[in-house]
Length: 260
Image (cartoon, rainbow, N blue to C red; front, side, top):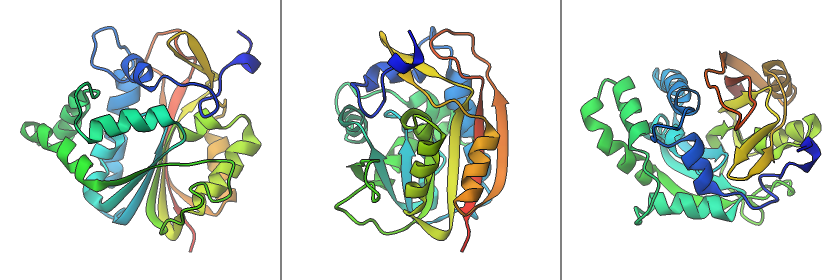
């Protein structure tokens, strides 16, 4: 399939549950656990561990219906606002938040984070902490300059962007423009926590391939600096997975703060 024929995450039908099962589950055949769950949680836990990134409001802008990043974030903020572009992703996420029958099981991610904190016997409490912190789940539209229009959100102390720009950006211009719009939701001095896939062009979900913007860490850092961010930390992890479901080369993790 030519890349121009790949589906677009926020424009075409995206099977959020299939995505979770193929890239985030605890099934023996799911090979992505180190790259999608363990490594991001380890970096996030380390990043938040000294307690200087904290505040009242955090905005979660992660792709798909993932919640595991929030295990490392929830105790540092009073309110977490989750923004999604897809109705199916919102429905899947709400199923977990509301503890409905058939919700995706994230216990394996909770266990890993609890072990990182040295509290492996308390992993079952992590889900409750995330659910208590998530106050709003809202749909956003990247075509608008205010992506939550007509709502005006209070400026956030921290924004977590997890592979979100990878999925929605068709090219570098869109990547930079979406970053500008996201930055408008953040307080001066607030923190941008960015996780992304490097060197990717597609992700397979079920029978469909979805476009991924192909970039490297320098593209991401330069875009952030151009939008008024100061880079505090940048880590790159090479891909550990053998699979044809996606072609990413590695993962990038960036912590930055918005200049005052």
